[in-house]
Image 1 (spheres, rainbow, N blue to C red):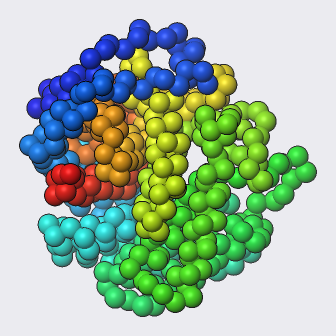
Image 2 (image 1 turned 90 degrees about the vertical axis):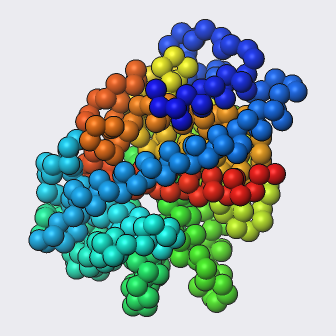
Length: 457
């Protein structure tokens, strides 16, 4: 076992003097009345000593491990994903780095451009010409091919493209366009290209129009039996874009409009806290009520955790302590406690709030990205609150994540594990897994650990 993982286990043992109850019956594991399933908090009188043990040298070891993992992941994608003939990036990459499908998914193209630019702009060791060159080439590919002409207007993006940029499929959602905005704005910050920033702003205006005014441009017909719903993914994504587009840009009408939009996004996200504050539901009605059936009972712990750190960041930006408290209590602790698999470890992908078996076939699998979001959310929540039980939970997720997902043989991370934690799919990239969740998690955790080690109060 890696010594970094061993010290995590030692810390967890030190933080709790009582053993866990035996695992409950599997069919009851995710029931709404079983929400004390997370690890127990530290016993009275142990908090100070535990926090001290977790500081200094131990956190430094953790930071070094995260840092080396980030270097490994960046090098994997630099080596295997670039299309030097047609531009853009391959994302369907097998275990050893071989390309097994040449389709290019627009949202993953945008994510990779953003990630390269963010690393180049903010981390000295990644200020390398090959990273900037790759990001610039990826941005050029996006601007040339991603947008398609259709009845939806000139701002609709394809979902996937052929290797040479021909549109294959368009989705009736906003997510390709969201990552187009994210990519262009971050690339404009690196290159100083004002036209690129303007294009990102214009696309954002179209997104807001689709979401808040008229969704018909997305091409989705309103059928008579289709009940309008509010998916948490939409305001989450818009809040992410608000923070991206307003970062470092003080004053002006545009920034003020983003502040108003940000408040709307927060309100929309928070209304997903249902059942008298005991559950975060993935879908609610447009007026914030609970929906009937499987759709209304669906929980996605990883998504709720991601929303948690989005809200924490936004609350910190505007000095909103109440929002930060809500973020920790409802969007970090609650989904962690509900989502943790007491028998096998790791976070379930989907749950049903009433204990029915979720209809998603992959519901019990352990996927890479919920664990990435949990690491960010728990560490950020600890930095804000300095509550030792949050750090203890971070280390529990840390131990599971780094002992199951990284591929020590070929680099990068596996993305899809069985409930028991065995590799189910061994590719490193596909239509949904690209150069985003893993490096963003490692990048953010490294920065938070930097802050914790600098400010040890």
